[in-house]
Image (cartoon, rainbow over all chains, first blue to last red; front, side, top):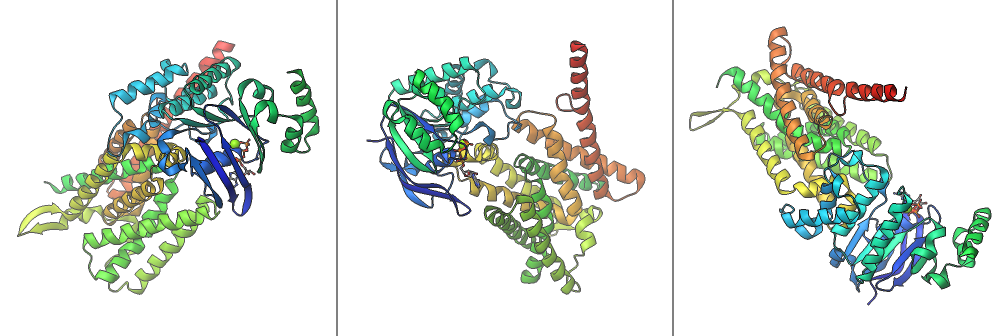
Length: 249
Length: 294
Ligand SMILES: Nc1ncnc2c1ncn2[C@@H]1O[C@H](COP(=O)(O)OP(=O)(O)OP(=O)(O)O)[C@@H](O)[C@H]1O
Ligand SMILES: [Mg+2]
């Protein structure tokens, strides 16, 4: 069964359509890049799948059932700018929030939850920062805390909105190998990604998006000059530069 | 208990309840809503009086809670249909407050409330408005009402601590996890309305707004942990009540006003001297950096 199926999803903000009749399914156990220019609706697509913005029409299924019935199967890494990093809390506390969906009402995180959260921080190389106030972390470290929180959700399908923004090259490689580990466990990871140079190297599949679905499929077949042209429209100078890169690879 | 004792207890209860609720308002960037609700509850109080024909505290509480939640609801409605949130608060606040004032002046002859009293409050009279059951003196009514609201607030925060925390920090994540963020929002608004109205009659709107915002803002400068922030803001609320009372007796001025001033002074001192977020420590840190690079 497909981990994610999106059928005819349309989303509008104040009547302005942002996504139009987007339909696709993704296969299990793949790393999937979501690619498109700024304002293409990538974040909106993820939010629509997770029920964070209302859909004007269309349906979303996680392993064949509506998202509401499958919350525990899904992990989420929002764009880093979406929260107030001056909030009085530390890294461990933020990661523990990933456990909230499993803990249930009226209960506090248990010792096990704390241990699990610490192990997630360790996986992203942030264990020694567990008690650090979150405003005192660098941008890349904050990003890794968010990633650890998603790991703490212990999900089967992950949605990550630009997890590489602000992280250095070494960390980016570390995160990618972490994502590959998840993949090896049969998990499915959808990642909004901006750097066209690394698409072929990182992702098994790509979804090209610009208000509409332009194309989806295995990277080899789908990440072509023609599809990119359709996705990025008239930004030719930029595309030519990318063309050279694609041809190099 | 002595007259002085009751006043200090009333002021402290206001300080603790408002301080704790205020922390969440500050963290959710809704401090303006405190101002709004502390005024619109006037409509609730007048409405409750007109319907029940009684000035009993319980009717006031219910009326104020309803109007408080309505305020929050209208603000949310306007905001979600594209009005900037501060403009939405302004529109709802002024219109509901105006309706309250009009009703009050229409029926002014019948109601003992007057606007001066509502804004400044008169904590001086609190020890004389006694709750008596079977002829037994149980202390001032206001203290019972404030005490009950404080217990209610503490229970809600204790039960829903993690839900309130995540929906304040990362509402999107909270929704994704299935936490009813809107319900939590209205729960907080309900707490805010109850706290406001319980404090309102005794100490007046100005002290309520001061106590809702200043202790939380002070605590925010002193800690990086939510639970500690709640405790500090309660302590600052109590300190303000005590300091305010003594200022008032020394200079023979309004007690509520002095408590608000005391809260302001505590904030100002913290703003300059806070070891982590204070002006002075930041200035010193910069100085040190300059010296190092020089
Ligand atoms: N809350 C909102 N209210 C109104 N319009 C919005 C809102 N959020 C996004 N939009 C609009 O919807 C469109 C898609 O936004 P979205 O954030 O999904 O794009 P994106 O592909 O994630 O872009 P980026 O690469 O910059 O993150 C944009 O035109 C944006 O202006
Ligand atoms: Mg985006």
